[in-house]
Amino acid sequence: MMRFSTLLKHPADWMTGADADSAIVLTSRIRLARNIVGAPFPGWARKQERIDLLSSLREKIESLPNMKEAFSQELSALSSVQKQVLVERHLISREQAARGEGSATVVNRSQTLSVMINEEDHLRLQSIRSGLHLREAYDLIASVDMELEQKLPYAFDHELGYLTACPTNLGTGLRASAMLHLPGLVISDHIGQVIQAVGKLGLAVRGIFGEGTESLGHLFQISNQSTLGESEDSIINRLERVIKKVRDHERNARLKLLEDDPQMVADKIARAYGLLKHAYVIDSKEALTHLSLIRLGTDLKCFPYETIQLCDTLLMDIEPAHLQHQAGRSLTPEERDTNRAKIIRDCLHSLPNPDICFIN
Image 1 (spheres, rainbow, N blue to C red):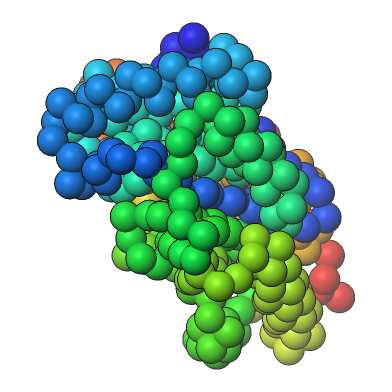
Image 2 (cartoon, helix red, strand yellow):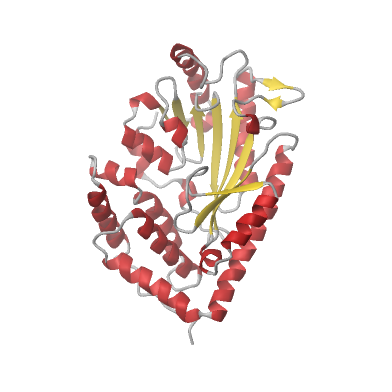
């Protein structure tokens, strides 16, 4: 089994994508909720019931071909910082990080597949891909789901579908989502209209870490809200159509900003570059905002294209738990802001001055 330090040594595969869609659609994620017949939901189960079920489930998950040499750990054996690192990497939920004994996670080597055991449901299977690749993410998770269903007695009703702890997950138990980078819509002040329109289509728009979190760095998650009475294919196809429309709106917003006020766009990108390269103290919110502008500038050909991958790696490395794990100790907010600024300066040291090619 893989150690925690090995898990963090390399960026996840989904953090290193560089296809045509990844400039706007960072990631695609599919999550399935599954439960076991006859076992109480984790939130209702006694501690010993959770522990006993965990032992059985974990063994079967670790035996999957896709989980060869995976990271597998009970949450109670991890420090609070280590658990928060997994949250920041989108490998476990904030809710699971708060769980006590009888909860675990299993993550494959590339961090594209993870299974949360005894979170809200007995199993939460998740696949993440870079760019707009919902179908590929679903194909992987569906194959794993089929393998597990041959080994485990899933709780399933012929009228209601897969039974889940939360009624909103009944049916397919599928939650599909995409993370989008939308600075053009935010800067042009059109993001509110887009969020409202997406909501009317039965989809949810959330912050970077999902439900109840704010949008930072112009990053937004769009996902389906209901899973009952709709097939997996229908959910994915509907979400994909909406994601493509939002992507196109963002692309048009960027072009309109360049047409209407290129000086303003150039100033924002150049200021972000100067501040990140020379700041000695910077908080998380400010850093994410300026990295977003560097990312935007890369899409506008102000920086080498590989700068997008650099920004995406930094988005993770400067999060509070990652900073503390790297330091090997707890850090005060002031120390985190200082360390964050140094990491950014070091990473952007060789980044050339922006080539503002869209101003005549």
